[in-house]
Length: 376
Ligand SMILES: *Cc1c(COP(=O)(O)O)cnc(C)c1O
Image (tube, rainbow, N blue to C red; front, side, top):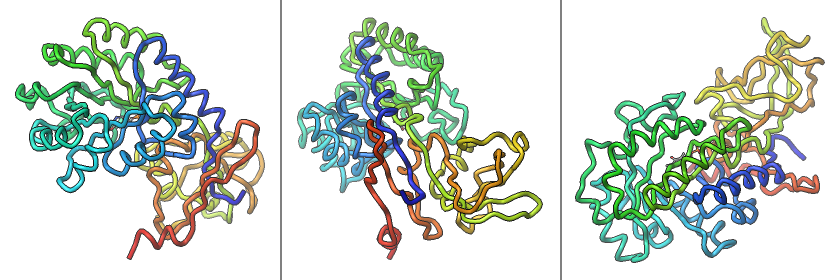
């Protein structure tokens, strides 16, 4: 297999899906996939056996959900939310969505009549900003000060109530059930008086359900209690938890040299292929490595672009790195290929699936045309 490539392991993906399935069964929640975080549609035959649909951030994700997910499951639901919808897209979105989620009362009032005219069965929701902010990183904190995501209590407009079937919030990022509990306290305090005619509440994403030490029992308890207390359906829409630790990014050492420290240049890029390592930022794990200085040979691993900061970090190894050696970054499936770029004209990593029998399937290879095609 030619590097670089993202390698998604079907067995690991299915393990995550089974954890989510267990949560659905025992809590009564409906879980849908946030395409924003994981959109490897070649796996949707598998994913659609477990999850109830997809949540989309706009027209293109909604289309992907309708065309590549719902074809495996006629009951699959497409939920579409955007910070703002556009006049020239709203009709198509209404046609292919089962649920539409508006960000503000303004947007809802602007589009609700048209949306219902086009799709009388569509469910309409408003995204609430519960104003509980416990997300560890501001970049990924939907409830930070002056957030544009969701409607605060002060901005809520009771005139929308006659149109809404549900309320949404999304306030977490890689967080535990305790954090959800805190959000719910604030959400219920301000908004439970409006629950009377609701069919559902959508608890958003950011639930780190498939992480080993996540308190699944607590989540199940919270969802069950909420459903029973208010007689509503509850949706969860994780992205990260679906793709969490389901595979890696495989790269090759192209050159090594010393400039104060040992440097290794790889045929991948932090900036272009592992964007959250620089945006969040966080340190990706490298297979067989340790912190700088722990093992005998330490290298600064860097990408094959001209960006000075295109550096994955300093890692130590038992043996010197040689040209041609593979360097494997762990957990590079969620929020990687959905965000990657061809910055510097660098080749996009291929997409590979490791089947349950161990076979590697090259499902997509990218080339010059992909670079050229997004420019003109
Ligand atoms: C990003 C997002 C999600 C998924 O979040 P994860 O952290 O990947 O679970 C769900 N809902 C909304 C509205 C989002 O913006």
